[in-house]
Length: 194
Image 1 (tube, rainbow, N blue to C red):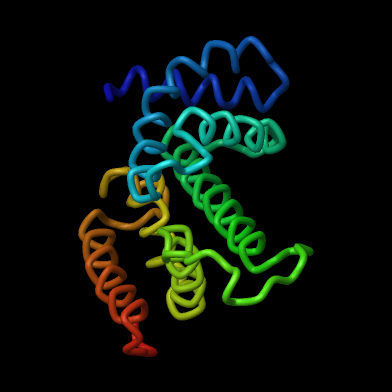
Image 2: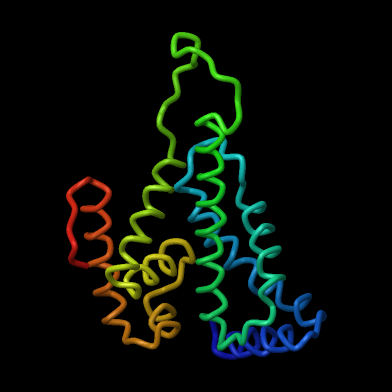
């Protein structure tokens, strides 16, 4: 993305924060393509037939962003980092709700003989990733943020570095270490080191 467009997005974010609703109308088409790309990446990790589609994820994101318009947007990267966190929350909330519904959530009890066979779904994996990311945040919050921005938000190493105010080399290292830590955590081999 060229520097002039990045600057324009930052200006529109700041105008929107100050109450200019026309700024949001101008901002939306400029960020939609990038948000759609990030949402598509998130949704590609979900099971087929997922009840939340890419466009619905973006719509839910916009609804949540409307409540956050008073944020002092630093720049375009800050905006997309926050969007990444929100998409992660939306997907995790939906996965947890699905799991809760599967566990009964007020449903009438039936015998196991009468219960349908349920195969494990990626929603359970997403909840496991969320739990692992929360554990990682306790050990090393920055590495957890790097995963959220890179995986859920699709931010580049440079954009992530800009948001976190660290070097791109630090982000690349954190990304590698976080992925290794998450692999160990999700495979059941616990480690307290990040």
